[in-house]
Image 1 (spheres, one colour):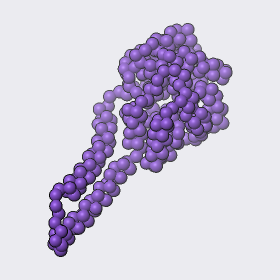
Image 2: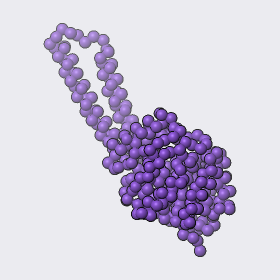
Image 3: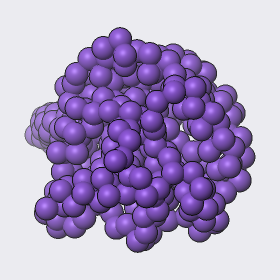
Image 4: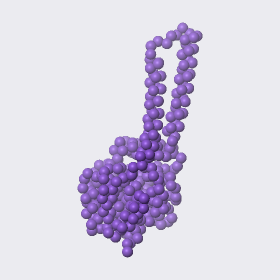
Length: 327
């Protein structure tokens, strides 16, 4: 008879060969101190290095280790979603493989969960080893998102958090393709609490969130939880239209009541560029929303798992849960 899993630790990884051994060691050490059953769910998001092979080897002799191996790179947020789909624990912890988030904080999260909180998230008070540009853009994004949405999404927080089983089940019911998990956790509600910490520098390797991915994540967050950009486009359109009308009245006044003639095309070109620029910006905003509507209508699966490695003790329970999920 299988042992009931108390904690599921979801660890997305993408080309983390340089750090994955230390990640496994530290998380394993932390979870052993709980004295309760746990599983380590490593999600390989299409890595091209040997980190998946390393975890596969660990799973042969450590039955707490499981590997969800994607057929290609589907993205960090999708990897987290797959981990939640496969997780069996009463409490689910999400932590990246790069060790910037200290695994030792998991014990504090478990303590608050035992005190009755269904979501315990880590809030960064300091970000070590990151450039001023990344710190500034991250701070700007969180504050823009906070003032753009109608739900309260905590600032300076990532995906490092503990969620209760009931929260995990609610998140699995949300079908959107362009996922922003930390926003979805805020949207479902429940009792939530923050734990403050200093984020460490990467132990090894390079960041997996360059500027391009940061922009994609930002757009997913804003468009998933706010339609205010569309309203702002309407307000700006009205403002520019009013300004254009007033300028037209001014030009007619010059033509009808003064000897001043409008010479050249400078003013006309300036107005044309201003209005055309605004129209293109508005079309870009609409395109972001329409593109996401298009993604939702395709109804493709969020991810494809090419291999799953698990200790025999829990494999049957996992397969049954995943089969129910995809009915």
